[in-house]
Length: 315
Length: 291
Image 1 (cartoon, chains in turn red, orange):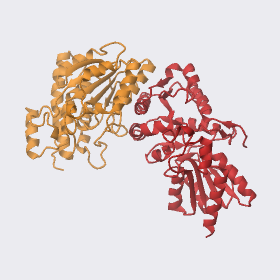
Image 2: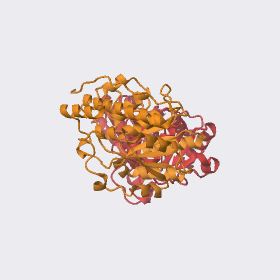
Image 3: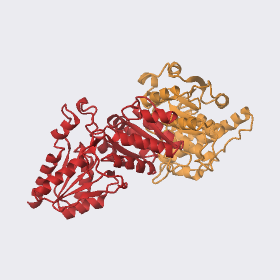
Image 4: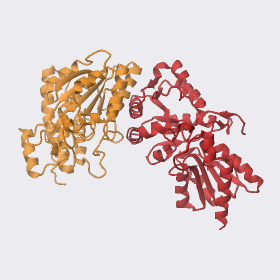
């Protein structure tokens, strides 16, 4: 199921955007200067008039996309997630969410992807910010196949959607037969001692932690939850009731993100011991991989958290 | 509610086949009726931005009733001209004019800001036919208008986009981001109209964070600029008939207006930004507008 090769999900994003533009003349891409870092150079060559680069101007960028949608276009917005979400937040709320504009916003290079560039360039709050706004679908795909399918599903969704496109290399978790569905979780490994719920770059470390824990005799369920909204609440309740302990893991702040979304369901349906793994505080200097280790966002860190929640379950 | 909702006959759209002077006269009368309706709406709701409504009434009436190529029976007609009311707080003016166009039944105006009404204090395109964008937070309309103009540009369509912005609103940087993008692409089907009444919520624009020299600023950003009397129906019509002012450049029209116009005790008075008239003021305003 997995392979050792690591993929930059921006490549799957770029290929899919080009395919979508071929399939539907209404598709346009709106970006703010970041043609290269969003891997849109080939798109620009193939569809020059359909790449709308508004310059370094995130507020106008989201507004322009809303206006293009009003004019019958299907805009795909691409920009570094840290700037796009924070600078364009009021436009995301009023022009897209409140208006129910059919715009797909792609947050590129999210989480700690920019590593050594520091916390100004890290996007570990984007999910929390967007979760606080009603009516935006939020998807955090975990590998190239899922990125491609999530982008298609987001565009087909008749309203605003946010897709987080990972830059830090991930292994292929899904094969080409995978069928992504908005709002649907996927049980990758079954088990009854605890559940690890993960998405994005944390999918592979979660699977590896589960394998390591199996060697200790612990049957740990691994649930992939690419859609943060609408959250597959039934799968969360099932995990709580059937395994009695949940660890969430995400490349995002521990406050208000995917873990927060799961916790909101758990606490109001079937309270069980939980741990929320993610980024705590402004990160020190280091590469994305170094920061994953620093914050325990790796198989060892996940395994430790699982052992702890299982202990709390027993007490 | 303190107000007395009465039926004021709403004007309809003015046929574009008439001579310009004739249309201007009809639009002037329409604006007078619209102001009476706006006064009633704000009085009934006990809330609103009446002085800003009155400032924009003539411009909005000329555009929606006399200039725009729209079909109120088919509000989503893809080839329609677009009007973006970026100063979304002037919603009484906007809603009254949309109702006059026939986008919805004018009886709905009596529910302005009432519980459960589609007529929120700031417009919601999902609930109000004819509204193109959910404005209210300032600096949102112009970027959206640029996107609308771009969609027409990509389609090779002649459809035009008009965006009315408040002058104080121009302090929001998003407008200038959008203006750069519009000029860069030569979107001459886009027309920005500034309701230049000189006042913002708490003081004059020039005392707050000055806009002048606005004409030169807009020109430097790549727009073709004209100034016009914002309560002069004939001058507004004649100017809109000349669009685009220059091929390949977006249009920037500075419409000189008075907040609260034509009510003597409201005009150019900053305290009327969101004040609601009391009984005596209501009666006096009614008389001044009606006469």
